[in-house]
Image (cartoon, rainbow, N blue to C red):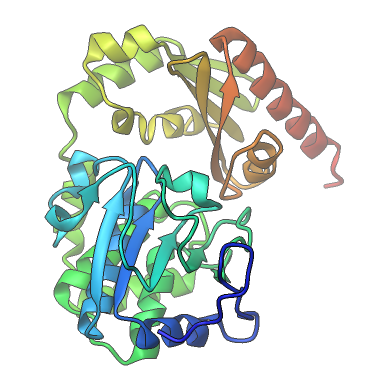
Amino acid sequence: MDLPRTGANGHERLKTAVDPIASILKVIREGEIFLVCSHAGPDGDAAGSMLAMGMLLEAMGKRADLVAADRLPEIYRGLPGAEGIRTAKHVHGPYDAAILLECDGLARTGLQGLEELFLVNIDHHATGIEYAHVNWIEPDATCVGEMVHRLFLAAGVEVTPAAATCIYTTVLTDTGGFIYGATGASTFELARDLTLAGANPIRIAQQVYFSKPMAKLLLLGAALQNLHREGRLAWLWITHNDMVRSCAAEEDCEGIANYALSIAEVEAAAFLREGTENRVHVSLRSKGRINVAAIAERLGGGGHENASGCVLAGPLRLAQEQILGELRGALAGMAAEPG
């Protein structure tokens, strides 16, 4: 592939501000072998968009290697082609480009070996940054899966039932079942198009919401015992011992923060998980009036305005005080707003 190679790591960043879709398709058409990856601890958007991107590349006559630093959560292992995602911590090979989905930097992937590759960055987070050689950041997109769908359409590639299933899963999960994020009329138009293309909404929803492992429910029970509320703020947490007693994996923590947010009149919520090496993983949620992405970014994390996360130094008690201080400040600012 004939690409400029004069930048800091042997490549020159391409100008993609005018038409990033055209720039990405140019990279794909001029290459042959691609690496596709997303963030560590893959969620529904990461899993579905990786699989759909792999299908797009293969339909365009390319080879795609799908790699994730962590295994897919159980509820996504039944997606079409999921068995083809390889779990690794280091990547190497004669790739023409690495396509990074939903990552705000190389560290977010949890993979080593990306530094010397030509990088394509596709992200929809408000905290996304242009770190790659080709960057497409679309904060108004419902999910990265939606952006991959646009690539299908721009390339003139058929959205097969398998691809539609993967992309529908990204939409369903990244909107929390169509209740937050950039959900709007276009979201349901996309869901309709994917359904017409062969996605089965009932089957996908049942797989996502009604196939949880027992360990996840035991962990949820432990978290709910630590549920607290303070006006429009709610929070809950689990310790490392809770994880061990529940026989839970990190993936089983997904969605627990939403239970605190679901309380009537609560505007913002936090879920804290005590990890190893004196680190505390924090998930932040908002009903829309508090921008939790801004809070997460100040603390070294990122995400959506209504759903974000970060990692804080422990112990758990100090991390809790830190994040609650941030949320209290944001709520106080909201109260001071006119109207």
